[in-house]
Image 1 (cartoon, rainbow, N blue to C red):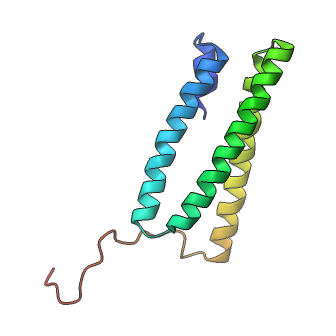
Image 2: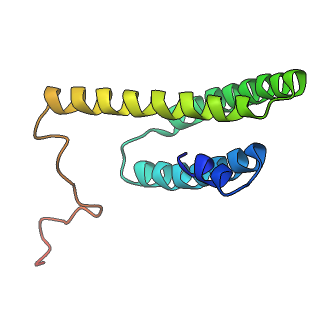
Length: 123
């Protein structure tokens, strides 16, 4: 998400910078989602539910932003929206990570093995 302001600073149009940044976020989110499903942290029904909600939200926000950009002929609306989303997500991640660590100080700071070893294995 931090990529968009840099691309605009390099001279890219805000719509192109936003689309490029969004594509990068989609790829990294897909990788994180795949690892979470493989690791057993998420259930498929949860993934489908949040996918539908995210898709509906993205279509609504995109439609609203397109309308506002066309109405006011200001591309800066996209940048202001990105700044608000980045700031809000930063605050939410910090708060929820802090709450999770306070709730279980030892549970959040360790890794578990990807492949469980059987007890009869000599290794």
